[in-house]
Length: 105
Image (cartoon, rainbow, N blue to C red; front, side, top):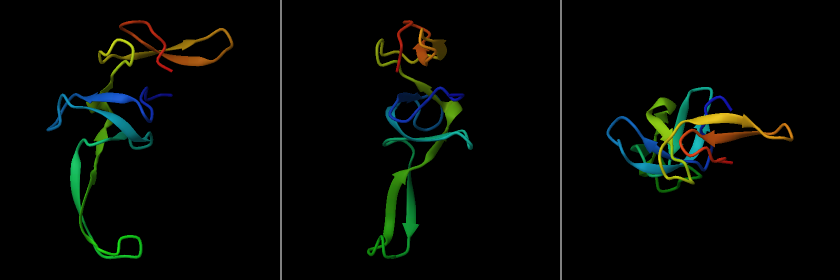
């Protein structure tokens, strides 16, 4: 829970060549503080032919971004915002948007 961003969240890029773009988080690497966002930071990878990829050639895929360069977009209010952790009555924890005070998940 320490990162505040999870898989399938919508995020906006804050810094770098992709600044201002929004996308869906595909993978979160908490040990490296990196996220992979759909259709953001596209890199080209030159690959040899193999059993899984018989053709080989140049493959385009998403590269990782540092987690500090992305910010969560609230699904309720549509603005990018920080999150707070709030405990519900049953002892379950939820992420809450700091701008509109709505539960995110």
